[in-house]
Length: 121
Image (cartoon, rainbow, N blue to C red; front, side):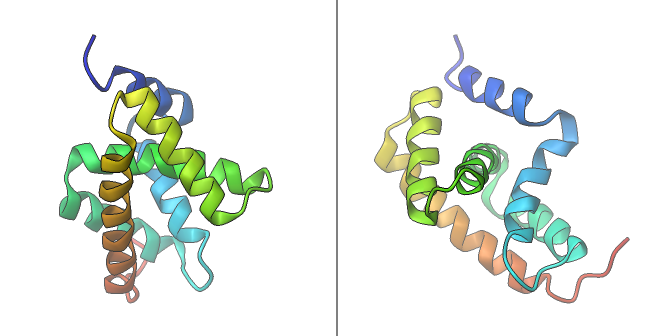
């Protein structure tokens, strides 16, 4: 079985097709002061910056992180639980995934900032 097959199941159940990126966009929208155009731009920029594989992993973590927050978890606990789950489902080392996703989170913040003047298309 391919290494990322379980991750594919997370993505299938969370969103279909191009809408899958919407959860990274939703994570951006979760921050105060951001809008749809800015967050859509940031999602696109992030994918270009970190590559397809890390963008898919970040999206999967985002889905679980936002779900955890919606169910009352603190931000740090929701992030850690999402990392643990995605690492297990993807058969990845949890520390490696945490490092990669923390770097992706930093890149996401930079993309959000870079896209602050984005206009709706």
